Image (cartoon, rainbow, N blue to C red; front, side, top):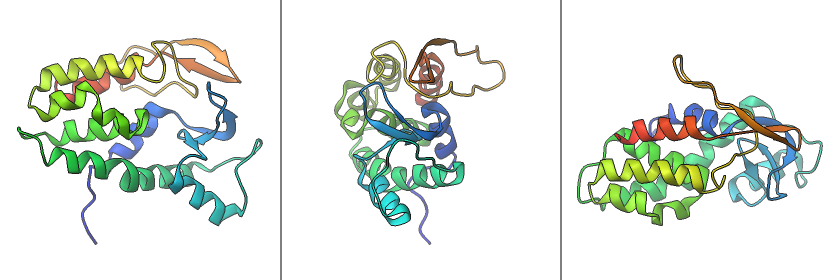
Length: 190
């Protein structure tokens, strides 16, 4: 058995930032979504769903928490950790495991294209503080456009300020991503 490309504790951490919805819903873009933000656009998810159910995902479908955690790990292992790890090998400065984990988390939440953004370029250049500051801004403005995302509020650690719902959309509370941003900033070392 080979060692994982990342710290396995990242799976529940990323899941907590993403939020878990066990029933099919439409995200703010109108895309059918389930679990930890899984959509039909993901090859890994699509192949798993088709093998399990023999049909396309549709309104009314549900997923178990254990299946969602399994899929989140599989997606990270196959789609999101490899491009992060391969790019980190070209870094001019050593990158901590925590910064690598934060990079995988960002790639999951914002897509692998986020590894072309300034926060990651700064990290590869060894400018960790600048990367952390840029990461925080990027996390707040990428998908949520400074407002919100669907799904339940991420669960913070003791002492974290509560995350306040901003609105209700499609039956799911939208929450501000400040808590996830602060966690990511701390993980990168800012």
